[in-house]
Length: 427
Image (cartoon, rainbow, N blue to C red; front, side, top):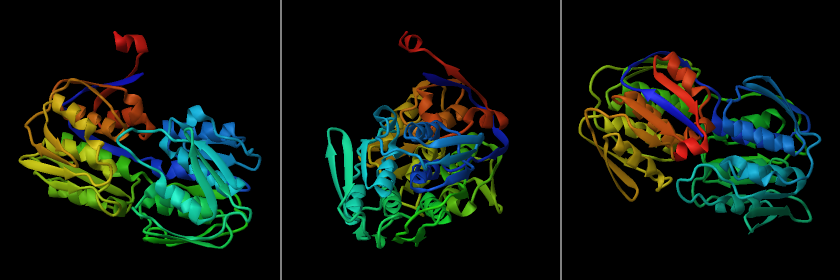
């Protein structure tokens, strides 16, 4: 078990460099199964979700070389038609991309139902709809998703997603890359990491157009070749440090970002009273005065991202007046609010909406990281709070943030990481 200990109350000052996008990396790595050659992937975030996926691929026969902490070579020529390890797959939500990748490569897949953060039901029915549209038969049996192409193999088809789903959009795109004919995804999600996955596949020889719009076309190709690709910066990691600078106060330059990806986050922080200045590949965030109330509704990109909802809630908890968050993606994602309340926040949750009455000060105590982004919110709250905050189950946070402790220490934060035994926690 891992816990973080934070001494709060110190403004953040300095420069922080953003790592590669988690949500792009965890899709691109399974997609390397489609490539007949060696992929050199740069700007890969060194996080636990990535390390887990690499272990899964290696167990299937992939040859993996880590050239540096953030550069990896993967060769999947000799990958066997084997099932990924159940124990590993069930630890990570993004393992569902193995379904599309194995279906595309071998014509069949059997993957244990994925794990990951638990904040409400996240069905994969839209993934199934897409696979069926390209000629696969899919069924869920005893905790597994089993998919198999028909006798003629996968063929192009048209799928209109019932809801905008990032995971389904990517998974169908991966599965259709080597299919015969053209596949069209309508009502596709538009997130930056969808564009990044499409760009990766195209750089290896795929023919995908329209990524970043609501209609994506995949013209099937016979094979993908090896090549080199660099993953985009992480939009949510950048937003987390921006929110931290606003909640805690200070002057932070967030570098290695794509400012266009940050538009809705930057706009909301400006509305709350922060000074946000954009450069070509950096964003400067300053906050000196009192924060103002704001309202947020989470929406698919380019709307305000659900993955930033807990972090901006901490800013709202310290703002003057009453703010609201309406969650339209994962309605049960407010589990962290009870933890913030224990630190002195005033949050009332009713169904899909949280009403947050600002307070002058949060107070340190022991809290839990109930999922990845909730854990990030606990870190921000601890940095802003008076006294000592202990965050238990901090391993959730390390699923998506590379070198969080050292990056925050570089901004002047007092934070340390402690490994604990199960018996110590129980005691």
